[in-house]
Length: 203
Ligand SMILES: N[C@@H](CCC(=O)N[C@@H](CS)C(=O)NCC(=O)O)C(=O)O
Image 1 (cartoon, rainbow, N blue to C red):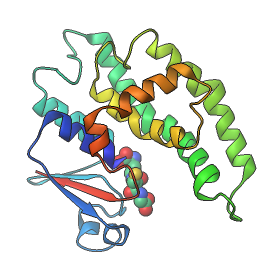
Image 2 (tube, rainbow, N blue to C red; image 1 turned 45 degrees about the vertical axis):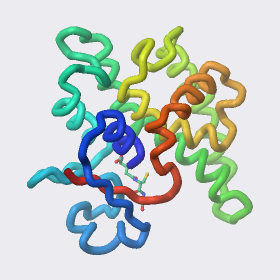
Image 3 (cartoon, rainbow, N blue to C red; image 1 turned 120 degrees about the vertical axis):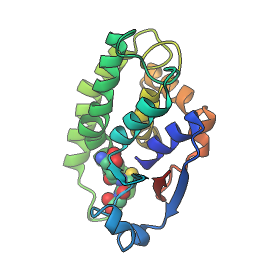
Image 4 (spheres, rainbow, N blue to C red; image 1 turned 60 degrees about the vertical axis):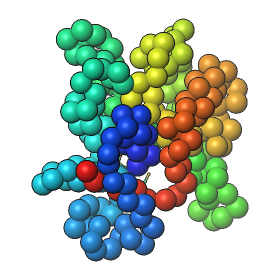
């Protein structure tokens, strides 16, 4: 999830210090003073401490994407802007829950007693029957989620797509696979650490 915010920092070419934290460092001082949950990302800007990838990204876009190259203008493109809000909430609240459970139970818990086939099956079914048709409908004939060009909304969706691609769930969905292939060919995506590393941002 941290990678989403980093990707937007890279796309906007912002002079942000990116601290790469080991898992242990996320769980102890001084980082716990910034984020008591011990999770990343956390964004520090002067006296402001901001958590939640989508909130950090919205803050960066509002302040540093004044020409709306990476996000729609609420006044000039109200529908696309409304959709960008939808995805900023949908990704962590609805999409991530299911994608992460499928990823963990199919990949990380594979071959262990923690693997639960009911969790895997029920979440895979929700993805296949609800989430995927919804995302396919929303992309329509566009190359990217909000239209013909890449936007921060695509970065917001990239983490969940990466998890699902990793466990092979996109293979039978050509439209979603093609969308992920476009996302993952982006230099900012390739530059981001999509492994288990922790990241914190400060400016
Ligand atoms: N909803 C939060 C999720 C934060 C989160 O769970 N981050 C993961 C990294 S992708 C993490 O720090 N995991 C370590 C842990 O939960 O101990 C966001 O989008 O910022």
